[in-house]
Image (tube, rainbow, N blue to C red; front, side):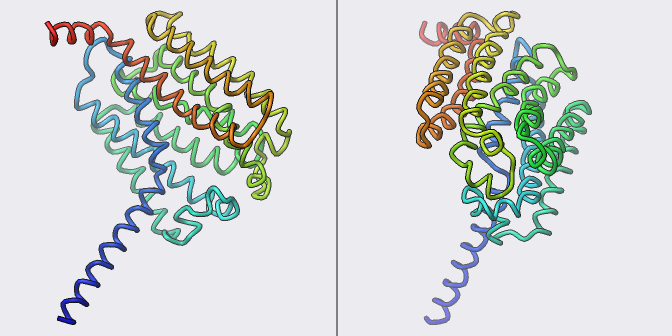
Length: 315
Protein backbone atom coordinates (compact mmCIF):
# COMPACT_ATOMS: atom_id res chain seq x y z
CA UNK A 1 0.00 0.00 0.00
CA UNK A 2 2.80 2.39 0.89
CA UNK A 3 4.53 1.57 -2.43
CA UNK A 4 1.30 2.27 -4.33
CA UNK A 5 0.91 5.63 -2.57
CA UNK A 6 4.51 6.55 -3.37
CA UNK A 7 4.01 5.63 -7.03
CA UNK A 8 0.82 7.68 -7.19
CA UNK A 9 2.58 10.62 -5.57
CA UNK A 10 5.46 10.38 -8.06
CA UNK A 11 3.07 10.17 -11.01
CA UNK A 12 1.10 13.15 -9.74
CA UNK A 13 4.28 15.18 -9.23
CA UNK A 14 5.52 14.25 -12.71
CA UNK A 15 2.24 15.31 -14.32
CA UNK A 16 2.25 18.57 -12.38
CA UNK A 17 5.86 19.26 -13.37
CA UNK A 18 5.12 18.59 -17.04
CA UNK A 19 2.05 20.81 -16.88
CA UNK A 20 3.96 23.72 -15.34
CA UNK A 21 6.80 23.36 -17.84
CA UNK A 22 4.37 23.27 -20.77
CA UNK A 23 2.60 26.34 -19.41
CA UNK A 24 5.93 28.19 -19.02
CA UNK A 25 6.88 27.57 -22.66
CA UNK A 26 3.35 28.47 -23.70
CA UNK A 27 3.71 31.82 -21.88
CA UNK A 28 6.98 32.45 -23.74
CA UNK A 29 4.92 32.75 -26.94
CA UNK A 30 2.73 35.58 -25.58
CA UNK A 31 -0.42 33.65 -26.55
CA UNK A 32 -2.91 36.53 -26.19
CA UNK A 33 -0.83 38.75 -28.45
CA UNK A 34 -0.34 35.94 -30.97
CA UNK A 35 -4.07 35.22 -30.98
CA UNK A 36 -4.80 38.82 -32.03
CA UNK A 37 -2.04 38.63 -34.65
CA UNK A 38 -3.45 35.43 -36.15
CA UNK A 39 -6.99 36.85 -36.10
CA UNK A 40 -6.01 39.99 -38.02
CA UNK A 41 -4.01 37.84 -40.46
CA UNK A 42 -7.05 35.64 -41.08
CA UNK A 43 -9.20 38.71 -41.67
CA UNK A 44 -6.60 39.86 -44.18
CA UNK A 45 -6.94 36.50 -45.94
CA UNK A 46 -10.72 36.74 -46.25
CA UNK A 47 -10.70 40.38 -47.32
CA UNK A 48 -8.33 39.53 -50.20
CA UNK A 49 -10.93 37.42 -52.02
CA UNK A 50 -14.64 37.63 -52.81
CA UNK A 51 -15.34 34.00 -52.07
CA UNK A 52 -13.92 31.42 -49.69
CA UNK A 53 -10.23 31.22 -48.84
CA UNK A 54 -8.77 27.82 -49.83
CA UNK A 55 -8.83 25.71 -46.69
CA UNK A 56 -5.23 24.54 -47.13
CA UNK A 57 -4.00 28.15 -47.33
CA UNK A 58 -6.20 29.21 -44.41
CA UNK A 59 -4.81 26.51 -42.11
CA UNK A 60 -1.17 26.53 -43.20
CA UNK A 61 -1.07 30.33 -43.47
CA UNK A 62 -2.55 30.89 -40.02
CA UNK A 63 -0.26 28.22 -38.53
CA UNK A 64 2.88 29.56 -40.18
CA UNK A 65 2.15 33.20 -39.32
CA UNK A 66 1.19 32.24 -35.77
CA UNK A 67 4.35 30.21 -35.19
CA UNK A 68 6.48 33.03 -36.62
CA UNK A 69 4.82 35.50 -34.22
CA UNK A 70 5.29 33.05 -31.34
CA UNK A 71 8.98 32.77 -32.20
CA UNK A 72 9.34 36.56 -32.20
CA UNK A 73 7.64 36.69 -28.80
CA UNK A 74 9.99 34.04 -27.39
CA UNK A 75 13.07 35.89 -28.70
CA UNK A 76 11.62 39.07 -27.17
CA UNK A 77 11.45 37.29 -23.80
CA UNK A 78 15.07 36.19 -24.21
CA UNK A 79 16.45 39.58 -25.18
CA UNK A 80 14.40 41.45 -22.57
CA UNK A 81 14.98 39.06 -19.67
CA UNK A 82 17.22 41.44 -17.67
CA UNK A 83 14.82 44.38 -17.96
CA UNK A 84 11.94 41.99 -17.20
CA UNK A 85 13.51 41.18 -13.82
CA UNK A 86 13.20 44.84 -12.81
CA UNK A 87 9.64 45.54 -13.92
CA UNK A 88 6.76 44.27 -11.79
CA UNK A 89 4.64 43.64 -14.90
CA UNK A 90 7.19 41.21 -16.33
CA UNK A 91 9.12 39.86 -13.32
CA UNK A 92 6.90 36.78 -13.20
CA UNK A 93 7.73 35.71 -16.76
CA UNK A 94 9.36 32.28 -17.26
CA UNK A 95 12.93 33.49 -17.82
CA UNK A 96 13.22 35.99 -14.93
CA UNK A 97 11.76 33.40 -12.53
CA UNK A 98 14.07 30.65 -13.80
CA UNK A 99 11.16 28.41 -14.81
CA UNK A 100 12.74 28.19 -18.25
CA UNK A 101 16.51 28.36 -18.72
CA UNK A 102 18.14 30.50 -21.40
CA UNK A 103 19.54 27.74 -23.64
CA UNK A 104 16.31 25.72 -23.91
CA UNK A 105 14.44 28.97 -24.61
CA UNK A 106 16.84 29.76 -27.48
CA UNK A 107 16.30 26.27 -28.92
CA UNK A 108 12.54 26.66 -28.53
CA UNK A 109 12.41 30.09 -30.20
CA UNK A 110 14.69 28.97 -33.04
CA UNK A 111 12.66 25.82 -33.56
CA UNK A 112 9.44 27.82 -33.86
CA UNK A 113 11.08 30.12 -36.41
CA UNK A 114 12.36 27.24 -38.54
CA UNK A 115 9.06 25.37 -38.49
CA UNK A 116 7.12 28.52 -39.37
CA UNK A 117 9.39 29.25 -42.33
CA UNK A 118 9.19 25.66 -43.58
CA UNK A 119 5.39 25.75 -43.45
CA UNK A 120 5.13 29.12 -45.20
CA UNK A 121 7.67 28.32 -47.94
CA UNK A 122 6.39 24.80 -48.63
CA UNK A 123 2.64 25.29 -48.20
CA UNK A 124 1.93 29.01 -48.73
CA UNK A 125 4.40 31.13 -50.73
CA UNK A 126 7.88 32.60 -50.50
CA UNK A 127 6.69 36.22 -50.26
CA UNK A 128 4.67 35.52 -47.11
CA UNK A 129 7.63 33.63 -45.61
CA UNK A 130 10.04 36.50 -46.34
CA UNK A 131 7.67 39.16 -44.95
CA UNK A 132 6.93 37.04 -41.85
CA UNK A 133 10.64 36.57 -41.21
CA UNK A 134 11.26 40.30 -41.66
CA UNK A 135 8.44 41.10 -39.22
CA UNK A 136 9.82 38.65 -36.68
CA UNK A 137 13.32 40.14 -36.92
CA UNK A 138 11.88 43.65 -36.84
CA UNK A 139 10.08 42.96 -33.56
CA UNK A 140 12.48 40.58 -31.83
CA UNK A 141 15.74 42.29 -32.79
CA UNK A 142 15.33 45.78 -34.26
CA UNK A 143 12.64 46.88 -31.79
CA UNK A 144 13.67 44.89 -28.70
CA UNK A 145 17.44 45.33 -28.94
CA UNK A 146 17.75 48.78 -30.49
CA UNK A 147 14.63 50.95 -30.84
CA UNK A 148 13.19 50.18 -27.43
CA UNK A 149 16.32 51.55 -25.75
CA UNK A 150 17.29 54.20 -28.30
CA UNK A 151 14.33 56.56 -28.71
CA UNK A 152 11.02 57.52 -27.08
CA UNK A 153 9.50 57.00 -30.54
CA UNK A 154 10.35 53.29 -30.19
CA UNK A 155 6.77 52.07 -30.27
CA UNK A 156 5.88 54.31 -33.24
CA UNK A 157 8.72 53.08 -35.46
CA UNK A 158 8.64 49.53 -34.12
CA UNK A 159 4.89 49.43 -34.68
CA UNK A 160 5.56 48.70 -38.36
CA UNK A 161 6.46 45.10 -37.47
CA UNK A 162 3.30 44.66 -35.41
CA UNK A 163 1.14 46.07 -38.19
CA UNK A 164 2.15 43.40 -40.72
CA UNK A 165 -0.21 40.46 -39.90
CA UNK A 166 -3.15 41.46 -42.17
CA UNK A 167 -0.66 42.07 -45.00
CA UNK A 168 0.78 38.59 -44.38
CA UNK A 169 -2.71 37.12 -44.53
CA UNK A 170 -3.37 38.96 -47.77
CA UNK A 171 -0.14 37.80 -49.43
CA UNK A 172 -0.72 34.24 -48.23
CA UNK A 173 -3.81 34.06 -50.46
CA UNK A 174 -2.92 36.34 -53.37
CA UNK A 175 0.88 36.21 -53.46
CA UNK A 176 1.12 40.00 -53.74
CA UNK A 177 0.93 43.14 -51.60
CA UNK A 178 -2.10 45.20 -52.64
CA UNK A 179 -3.03 48.78 -51.72
CA UNK A 180 -6.01 47.55 -49.67
CA UNK A 181 -3.66 45.37 -47.64
CA UNK A 182 -1.56 48.45 -46.90
CA UNK A 183 -4.69 50.20 -45.56
CA UNK A 184 -5.05 47.39 -43.02
CA UNK A 185 -1.37 47.87 -42.15
CA UNK A 186 -1.94 51.61 -41.70
CA UNK A 187 -4.85 51.07 -39.30
CA UNK A 188 -2.78 48.91 -36.94
CA UNK A 189 0.22 51.22 -37.32
CA UNK A 190 -1.84 54.23 -36.15
CA UNK A 191 -3.53 52.15 -33.41
CA UNK A 192 -0.27 50.97 -31.81
CA UNK A 193 0.96 54.24 -30.18
CA UNK A 194 -2.23 55.15 -28.22
CA UNK A 195 -2.69 51.48 -27.35
CA UNK A 196 0.80 51.00 -25.94
CA UNK A 197 1.19 54.42 -24.38
CA UNK A 198 -1.95 53.76 -22.30
CA UNK A 199 0.01 50.87 -20.78
CA UNK A 200 3.25 52.84 -20.50
CA UNK A 201 1.52 55.63 -18.57
CA UNK A 202 0.48 53.51 -15.61
CA UNK A 203 3.77 51.56 -15.77
CA UNK A 204 5.90 54.72 -16.12
CA UNK A 205 7.95 54.19 -12.94
CA UNK A 206 8.79 50.61 -13.94
CA UNK A 207 10.04 51.69 -17.38
CA UNK A 208 12.10 54.43 -15.73
CA UNK A 209 13.64 51.93 -13.28
CA UNK A 210 14.53 49.63 -16.18
CA UNK A 211 16.13 52.52 -18.09
CA UNK A 212 13.73 52.21 -21.04
CA UNK A 213 12.99 55.63 -22.63
CA UNK A 214 9.26 55.25 -23.18
CA UNK A 215 7.56 58.53 -24.05
CA UNK A 216 6.03 59.11 -20.56
CA UNK A 217 9.50 58.68 -19.04
CA UNK A 218 11.31 61.09 -21.37
CA UNK A 219 8.61 63.68 -22.12
CA UNK A 220 6.19 63.37 -19.23
CA UNK A 221 2.55 62.38 -18.87
CA UNK A 222 0.95 65.49 -20.38
CA UNK A 223 2.94 65.32 -23.62
CA UNK A 224 2.21 61.59 -23.94
CA UNK A 225 -1.51 62.17 -23.47
CA UNK A 226 -1.52 64.87 -26.14
CA UNK A 227 0.23 62.49 -28.54
CA UNK A 228 -2.37 59.83 -27.72
CA UNK A 229 -5.19 62.23 -28.60
CA UNK A 230 -3.55 63.16 -31.91
CA UNK A 231 -2.86 59.54 -32.88
CA UNK A 232 -6.40 58.49 -31.96
CA UNK A 233 -7.85 61.25 -34.16
CA UNK A 234 -5.56 60.05 -36.96
CA UNK A 235 -6.67 56.46 -36.32
CA UNK A 236 -10.33 57.48 -36.57
CA UNK A 237 -9.65 59.09 -39.96
CA UNK A 238 -7.59 56.16 -41.24
CA UNK A 239 -10.13 53.59 -40.05
CA UNK A 240 -12.78 54.88 -42.50
CA UNK A 241 -10.45 54.71 -45.52
CA UNK A 242 -11.55 51.14 -46.39
CA UNK A 243 -15.04 52.60 -46.95
CA UNK A 244 -13.62 55.50 -48.98
CA UNK A 245 -11.74 53.12 -51.28
CA UNK A 246 -14.68 50.76 -51.70
CA UNK A 247 -13.08 47.85 -49.84
CA UNK A 248 -15.80 47.99 -47.18
CA UNK A 249 -19.41 49.13 -47.15
CA UNK A 250 -21.77 51.26 -45.10
CA UNK A 251 -22.05 48.78 -42.24
CA UNK A 252 -18.32 48.97 -41.66
CA UNK A 253 -18.28 52.77 -42.01
CA UNK A 254 -20.88 53.29 -39.29
CA UNK A 255 -19.31 50.71 -36.99
CA UNK A 256 -15.80 52.12 -37.47
CA UNK A 257 -17.05 55.60 -36.57
CA UNK A 258 -18.78 54.34 -33.42
CA UNK A 259 -15.77 52.30 -32.28
CA UNK A 260 -13.35 55.13 -33.11
CA UNK A 261 -15.37 57.79 -31.32
CA UNK A 262 -15.57 55.57 -28.24
CA UNK A 263 -11.79 55.15 -28.33
CA UNK A 264 -11.36 58.91 -28.67
CA UNK A 265 -13.71 59.52 -25.72
CA UNK A 266 -11.54 57.25 -23.56
CA UNK A 267 -8.37 59.08 -24.58
CA UNK A 268 -9.85 62.58 -24.19
CA UNK A 269 -11.16 61.68 -20.72
CA UNK A 270 -7.67 60.44 -19.88
CA UNK A 271 -6.16 63.69 -21.17
CA UNK A 272 -8.56 65.84 -19.15
CA UNK A 273 -8.28 63.93 -15.88
CA UNK A 274 -5.63 61.24 -15.74
CA UNK A 275 -5.83 58.23 -13.43
CA UNK A 276 -4.11 54.85 -13.52
CA UNK A 277 -7.50 53.13 -13.40
CA UNK A 278 -8.75 54.99 -16.48
CA UNK A 279 -5.45 54.36 -18.26
CA UNK A 280 -5.91 50.62 -17.66
CA UNK A 281 -9.48 50.83 -18.98
CA UNK A 282 -8.23 52.68 -22.08
CA UNK A 283 -5.58 50.02 -22.68
CA UNK A 284 -8.18 47.27 -22.31
CA UNK A 285 -10.63 48.99 -24.67
CA UNK A 286 -7.90 49.53 -27.27
CA UNK A 287 -7.49 45.74 -27.58
CA UNK A 288 -11.25 45.25 -27.87
CA UNK A 289 -11.38 48.08 -30.41
CA UNK A 290 -8.95 46.43 -32.82
CA UNK A 291 -10.58 43.01 -32.53
CA UNK A 292 -14.07 44.46 -33.08
CA UNK A 293 -12.94 46.67 -35.97
CA UNK A 294 -11.43 43.73 -37.87
CA UNK A 295 -14.40 41.50 -37.05
CA UNK A 296 -16.65 44.23 -38.45
CA UNK A 297 -14.60 44.30 -41.66
CA UNK A 298 -15.08 40.57 -42.02
CA UNK A 299 -18.84 40.69 -41.42
CA UNK A 300 -19.24 43.62 -43.79
CA UNK A 301 -17.23 41.84 -46.49
CA UNK A 302 -19.48 38.78 -46.37
CA UNK A 303 -22.80 40.45 -45.49
CA UNK A 304 -24.49 39.42 -48.77
CA UNK A 305 -23.65 35.69 -48.47
CA UNK A 306 -24.57 35.83 -44.77
CA UNK A 307 -27.89 37.48 -45.56
CA UNK A 308 -28.66 34.90 -48.27
CA UNK A 309 -27.73 32.09 -45.89
CA UNK A 310 -30.01 33.42 -43.14
CA UNK A 311 -32.89 33.91 -45.57
CA UNK A 312 -32.50 30.37 -46.84
CA UNK A 313 -32.18 29.03 -43.28
CA UNK A 314 -35.39 30.63 -42.01
CA UNK A 315 -37.40 30.48 -45.24
